[in-house]
Image (cartoon, rainbow, N blue to C red; front, side, top):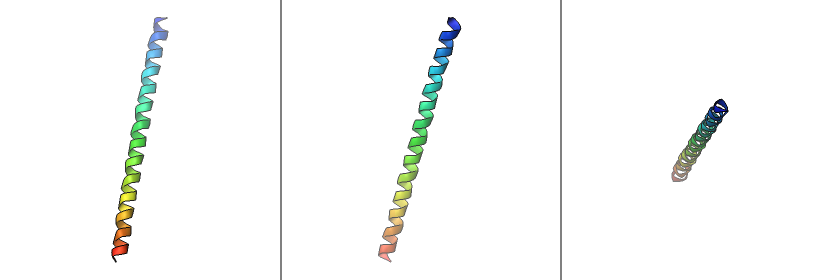
Length: 50
């Protein structure tokens, strides 16, 4: 019974870790996307200026 409880706690921690990884990955993707859009817009405005 004790082992099962410990195993459950470890599983929970593993899930939290996975969630954190997913959130970090999502944030990175969002940041990358925003950066790409911003640089794209800057590129377009340069084209318009020229």
